[in-house]
Image (cartoon, rainbow, N blue to C red; front, side):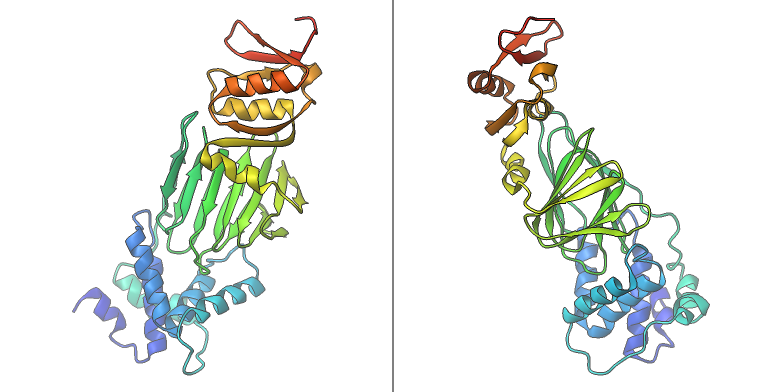
Length: 337
């Protein structure tokens, strides 16, 4: 008799079988989880309401939603159930007896598949300066990285954790109500189940822009909800603080994926820093007397000369090449230091 058959040998009901299968799916989660595994899991969840309910319940028992409040967990379970066929009869919630006190826990552990062991390892996705890349993640989500960016990813059958270490990234999140998609940036978490959003991080601050769907901004330490964004809104993060931007610049947040940089009344110093991200060997600096000048326009990413020529034409600044190869923009007519 196979280990899987022995696990189910004494299970008399469809509900119990679904609970046991959910435990097995949970146990399989590790760093070898593939898109095929994810597709098989989602197909199993959609097969019956018992499966959908069991998957939601096993996550609750094992602490799957350790940062999701009880009411939100119920909402996620209802959404999972709506994806399945209407239930034929009510069923009791999964109990700790099955997973912890005996029964399924003992059977699955005896089969050698319940103990999770170490969590899945982190995988880093990164780009070099001047490079843009798009990646498909194991759950079907798409990750697009801007120049000199890095995102670390850890997916298991229970959760989807990511960290934006540096740079800018767009996240097109595959829908999975049972596994919230959480991106850590600064002291906050951006939490979604199926949506599209952009995060730009630099040394001073980070900007979250929601493109589609809905996301929550949570405190990283406590899990407390700081804001819920609607499409077109943003959230500006600076250290442990943040504020809602009711009308974010969605065009700017998406233009970089097409090789463009968009500025709308941006400080010259900030604009120069963003342009330099795409050509770090030819950085643009701004003298203190010109830092607060404002610039608007659309510029090709990776072409600092086009930016320098444009701002020198439309702003009262002049460009000066420095010995280290960088270019400094300063007020026209000002004496060189």
